Image 1 (cartoon, helix red, strand yellow):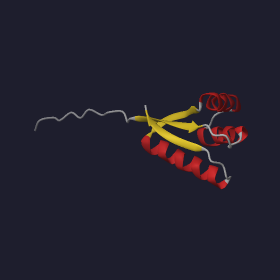
Image 2 (cartoon, helix red, strand yellow):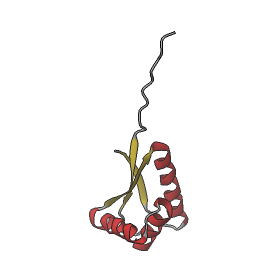
Image 3 (tube, rainbow, N blue to C red):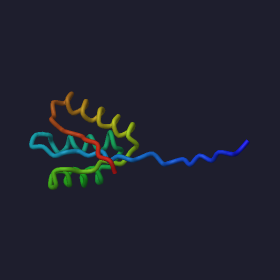
Length: 92
């Protein structure tokens, strides 16, 4: 019986991005980055300022399933706190 070699591929990665808006408080964005993306205060503040100045910022890179789960969690938390914060996924 011939041997079959399977070549395993690394899973495709996706970036999770937060979008700037005029209503979500900066401290809430820092809260999101710390609690859902495990950023320390300094890194969360740096990313938040990048979002504020550039309109968009990267929270992290994940497999599709993990990225989707994080987006759902962030959007639900934002809605519960009555913030219009938007979180999107982008192929890396």
